Image (tube, rainbow, N blue to C red; front, top):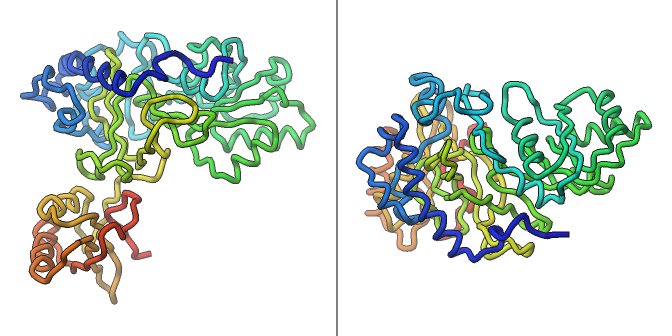
Length: 408
């Protein structure tokens, strides 16, 4: 059995990086043909953006901004140059956020993820993601058909009807949430129905804890995880190595400090920012609001692209203190003004009937003058009073959290 989808997956990392960034200027030019990107990237010369350092200077587009942008300039917020009629399907997801599906093959980049999970051309796949208005069902449907699989468009729910389809078509693959896979397995066992043809699965859209992984495996199904969004499709996927998730091809993935566009040190937890090289619908530094960290080295499966640990929580830690919002980017600003500090974490608690802020700051050579300066910066940036407490370098958890609301 062929182990890799194509030779792109095993090429030298430097070769991949060179191809991505040699193609990025043209993608930027295409993006800037849309008025929204033209305004956001005003003054940028695309031919200058040929490295990660150069890309990191471009503004971040937060996914949380999309509903307001699209409401002001429907339907796509001025970020897509093509008209709605130039796309294949038109979707919405919670927000609402409106998403077009490009008409080229494998528009959601999912065939590689299915292949890595053991799906092969000629397989029959039971797809239980929803086909109604949101793109989930079509993401996995289009990806499976791009791989050469036949798809049962089952959608979620109604296990009894699905048993009829499974017993008739004998699918070997499942795509859907891990929760619904367990529901199907349980319901089939209780009803005496035979769904033993399903041997492998690609799951997404919900947590897949170790206990559930082990239970599903014990019932004869090898299930792998994928991470994606309704905007980008499949961003990263698990392989048979079971060591993190491999980033998809034709994407540039950065991990930045929450609330900023600044890349974190290697191995640190930060927010996922993605630039896609899809000529029909490029995304330039789209911040997804999800946390992860990069894994060092190459995957034992032989794929050479960057690996991430998977989903590690949400990056938006904005909280309200004494009636005022405090945001991660404000904590990042404190760090910029005091580069002698390491990681920072603002802890919000209650004392009596009042909110209390304490900034924990890693410092190699703390002193009272520095404490006074950082305390003044905290007050200047947040417009609120708080205390500063020194902690030892590298003692704060590497979990991407910069604001901890401990008020219960």
